Amino acid sequence: MYLGLAISVIFIVVVARLLLKKFHPHAILLIAGLLMMVIAGILNYSLPDLKKPTGFSGFDLFALLKESFAGTNSKVGLMIMVIGGFVSYIEKIGASEVLVELALKPLGLLKKQPHLAAIAVIPIGQLLFVCVPSAAGLGLLLMASVFPILTSLGVSRLAAVSVITACTAFGIGPASAITASATTISEVAVVPYFITYQIPLAIVLNLVLMVSYYFVNRHYDKNLTETVMPPKTMTNEKAASTIYALIPVLPLILLIVFSGIFPFLPSGIKLDTTTAMLISLFIAVIFELVKTRNVKEVLNSFKIFWDGMGNIFKTVVTLIVAADIFAKGLISLGFIESLISLSQSIGFGAVGIAITMTIMIFFASMLMGSGNASFFAFGPLIPKIAAKFGVSSTSILLPMNFAASMGRTVSPVAGVIIATAEIAKVTPLDIVKRNIIPFTLAFITLLIYHFALCF
Image: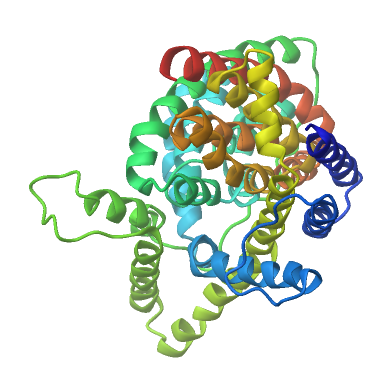
């Protein structure tokens, strides 16, 4: 009965080891998924259904891959590509930088309290991350703007870079790839998921991080002496005016205004994330046209959007497809049924298996250095688990959503950790050592708050 589960666990361990050795994650997840389906076929397990079977099981595997590409690109893939293109465009025109500069102005009030200034960056950065959902991108923007401010106040380089990476710990909001995937899987609208589920949990976890970082960094900084050389400020080629700060938050404003939650607004108008991003893109183009008064240059700037979409396709969307095949491989081997059966036999209910999945995805993110990769791999398994236990998919997906992005923040191989460490002239492992205590506390809080109080 548990043969499929045992084989699945072996594959998960092997995949984790290969990812830790920096093998290409797309290839590893894809090949592992296909191999699991081959083994499942040999063992006479049920394989995923195909809309149009080829008539030969060997070819069916590749037909399944084709259907995964087609299904992903027509749904969540298109949304994520448009988000990626929009983020690239607003970064290029300087809108992201203006938003960051404005958001960080309140730090000037805490000149005499350097460690309070440091933890004040966390909630500000989290708000920015909702609008600029690129962990490495936002991390670099904050390194250019807030890092010199904090170090000039007397905060150590490690303390400053640790709170900056903490700003990218929660992948929430309509522009987040994990949110897009979670809402697609759970079939919950993006805005209600963000407002009703993500925000309350994010507030609690941000408070835990702020308190823990204050004491952890103050403790480590006591006996630390260093000469800080602030990094060169990364500024946009053409200075953008203050009004450009509105552009990154436009999609969020549009989605909330036309979500139907305001009774005094026309109820017939509803926007999805992709449409809101496209509307915001064209508004950004109008801003650029007014600023530059160069039609040719502005029209040529669309290339930035297309390039951004292409970059997201080759990194994130293809990863979603590879992870989807990996998930289908696990399902083919009876991983879900065996896990549920095992959990029930040892007395686990819905809470027990949900905690297990949350812990699993946290460590998967640590190993992969990518919250997206781990969530895309395990997220699609949840509806079947939730149905077996008679609970909502959202109740299990929500903590996994947070755990996936939190795990990335304590991974020495994560892009945001490596990039910020390079600028701060510290090692990724040094940042992880500063992050591990606050995020361990935050992760424990996540489990207690969600499963004990809200589940």
